[in-house]
Length: 246
Image 1 (tube, rainbow, N blue to C red):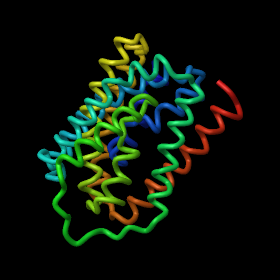
Image 2: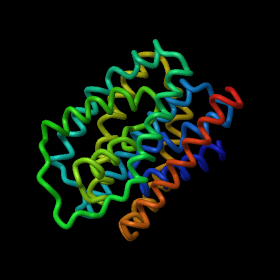
Image 3: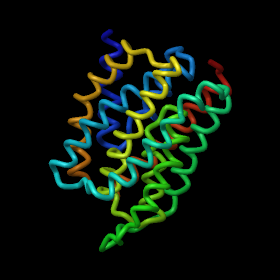
């Protein structure tokens, strides 16, 4: 019980600070605690749903969240995520793990490329955002992450959004994709409700403080923290899945 509360606070802080749902933090932790990869995905989706709702509310209050663009991205994510339960049910742990690592690797590659903060944000095509959301939601929720780990490099690296705006949109995307994924994986029987909600509710404490810190930090330093985290997650998860076993 106490360990679940501590895990929730840590995951929530990372969720608010990095603008992620928390899956890239929680899934590796649960794997190291001995959970099966598919069980970790179910708990992760539950936590992401709660922390992303709260974090997006805090971002909206600060004025960083652009609802109109966010809805196009998020509705697409919800549609894609609805298929995640079917994908998890019919895909092996090894393949799901490889997909998880591929998403992290893509993020690392994008952040190794120096991308200056734009002086003005370009207008974004909402149709393009919708289809980005569908693709990311379908893949990301199937491996227990909210999709922000892929959304952030796409919006910053390819669509030239500012990092603070992108982080807010990414977390808002996770709200819709995680709710859809939660429903889908509940129907597939992969949700541990007790552990998921204990970790999820306690993560709200960490989300509050993580979001407050991210609002004050310099974008360049924030990007460095993101890059460091992605590299750490990649090697820790690869070791657990393919060298230590599960």
